Amino acid sequence: MSILVVYYSRTGSTARQAETLARRLNADCDEISAGTAYDGPVGLLNAAVSAALDAQGPAMTKRYVRAYDHLIVGGPVWAGQLPGPLRRYLIYNDPKTRLVGAFCTSWHGGPQRAFFNEIRQLVGISTFPNFSIEQRHCEADLIPLAAARFARALSTSLSHVA
Image (cartoon, rainbow, N blue to C red):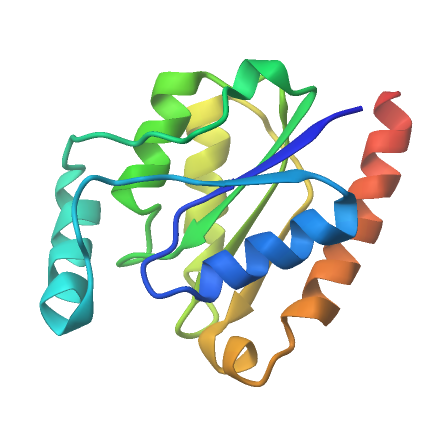
């Protein structure tokens, strides 16, 4: 059973989360390349505008999703929504039969529900294991604990599929 963890990260918090999760699951990990830099304060503003306007552009990875049995996706919450690069990745790769879980990072609790609901709508799956972590918990290095909990839930979910 092969698993690919695909993520988009603006500041590195989601990248740390994805890499930790991939290690726990013995999965491959791949970052979505947006083709646009969203660094710094101006980048943050551009990210919010990009999420709100559903801006188009590239969303490429190095690995081919169809080479894997299962897919887990993750990214930051931008203005209560999926980041544009992750949204485009989901639209163009049609991962319905492979998606088994999702995760996100956010500045504060609350907007995660909209993030996961948007994935459900884009992919056409009613439920899947998911987890979120707030930025303050990333900074406190609680990512391994959150990833361990998610990995356990995901293992249980996958055992019912196999």
